[in-house]
Image 1 (cartoon, rainbow, N blue to C red):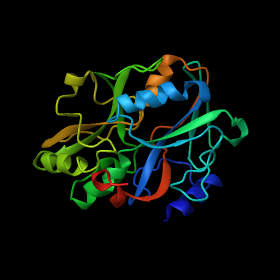
Image 2 (tube, helix red, strand yellow; image 1 turned 90 degrees about the vertical axis):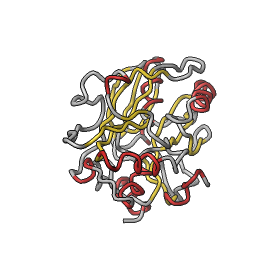
Image 3 (cartoon, rainbow, N blue to C red; image 1 turned 135 degrees about the vertical axis):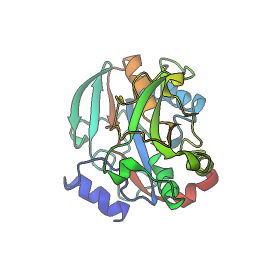
Length: 258
């Protein structure tokens, strides 16, 4: 399926589940929508924390079509959105055009789903895709660098990898420096503040078998968590794992070449 067809399917309610494993050759993105008055501080936060928050695109106030997805509408082309008020989740919506305001600034942020297709091509099994589940994501004790009102801990995504393929997985993902790049941590989850690996904060746990090592990558849910901690009066994001799929091919992002 082409990304344009997927976006159309999402827009008209025919696809309303996560996008893990969908359109695997194309760049997927996280979404954060904020009132204009918070946009500069948030942009500064992403610049200070590029591994967790690699910016793909910033849409000016009121704009809703991505230059990397012709004919797209970020208000309708994501399967599920979360609406927050003062740091609390108040609504889950399949489209947000009915609550859209001209002051909203939108940020598209890199997603680890982008390097997953390269991992699969490299022979790295990804169980969450095999089982049609959302990737497991965890809040950690790894701090981010503060900018304005935005501060907090890093969120990571976890994939169990066969021990013999850990270095290969690390090498492959390092080729995508603007899509979270190499792992933040490999091995014992307790070392980064994850007390119970079986209970992800977002997504689905898929188990870690004998002979496998958990690998953790910086996750684009980080800015969501940080913005929530800041208690922003109003914010809209994608639901974790329910991404915006662009027309940009993953190969074009190799080694950070745009």
